[in-house]
Image (cartoon, rainbow over all chains, first blue to last red; front, side, top):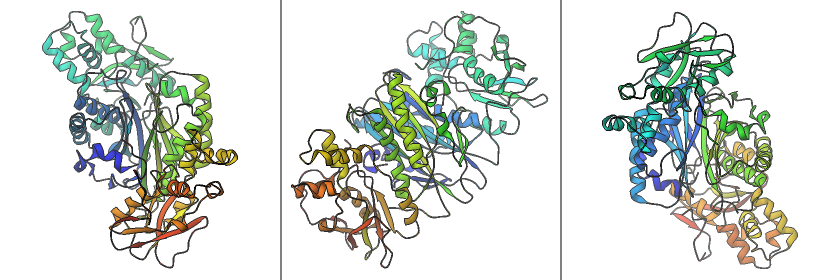
Length: 306
Length: 306
């Protein structure tokens, strides 16, 4: 990577490249990370594009924070401990004010998620942000999608539907309480990757995924990889006070079931395993295939990328 | 990462995700790589954008190959052994013919550089390709930019200037022999990252960098990081037969000194170290700072990213 170009951003937060696993950060041909003895590397990349993954009038701070949170959520879903990240950003112009604001959001994410920025690349073009995250998996362990077994409980962390409702707020489509709108907008722009929960589940969960495209769509990946059927009881879905207060309960349930952008974890626990704090049992694993949520969700379920 | 989107490309070359270090490839929340015991992770990301880093009429095969080669060159410059890569690609439309051709070039690069594709992300937007490469560095070793010492030899691999001359061919600015134009165009689109040389240099070279922005610009990074002056003798620059045959010798030297896109290695060797095969001694390390090539290179030296 070329320091000369990346330097444009990096100078705003060079102190944020330090971390226990970082042997060499920005400034050479590669970054060098040290994994704990016996650990394996977990890595994932997520790209966000202006006008596709976020509204064009988004604050640069939120944009940066959200891009990192979304990528970090994949580490959480594997049970990986964060080591660091790199950033490949394409910018139409070099706007110092924009960069400073962007870097502030990035700095907050670096701190919140323990993901020092160890390298990157800056190029000219339409605004596009690719965050690559690195994490360590101890021993032979990993939270995969394919281990759910008949009789397991189906569980989720946090509350569902807030991401989709937040996007409705951002898009001007929110018909609920304006105060709750602020909460939801924040949930959309500042999701919380469940990193600590991922580590906790590494020894107990049989399968896990993060909810980016919507519960039913993402649970479908566990069902397909595990060769089982996931049954969801909509009455058990955890809803935030903001969504509970919504007069249109069907809308709230649709957001919780098929809206995306929640970045909570969906996972399966074997019989007898203790439910972690802040999590809810929403269903069970049965023989069969696919996801049954007991409702007819008309229209496309989950976010369609193309 | 979402399989549903990346699958668009991945189905064309799913057999190419296998590798010794790959414990888990495409299809879960993260890829999992296994490093050799005691090895450290080297990683770098390079983004190429249509109309900026490559002509708009480039063949998709060449585009894919070049994007991977450019990223792999950073592993070579660190002396890292390739483990795998991920690909974040933004596409304006889903064009199956384009994707098939792109995937062919990608497959060739996967094979040539031992870089199985272990994950990625596909999004909609202006064409933009970010390749993240992963390599293993044994023990505490790494080829850094900062170790050049007074008295060392300055050396390069291969021949210089072919990348810039190739870009002139692609842009219709080549005034030399058309047959040599074909060779140069191929050198531009299909550069050769010096991965084996990087591994060889790990035990001997005091500093190294790959030449992406032009010899003088990139040697300048070694000079700055090492706190030394690099003196280049232009008479010693290795030129391909295509550039040697060019009637305008000054143009050939300018391309060799300040053209980019060569992806050869520039490195320093301590006194007594043997020059590896295919490499040329082009100067020496002296006390001082900067790069002295004995010529006045009017105009900007090296590729300016903004």
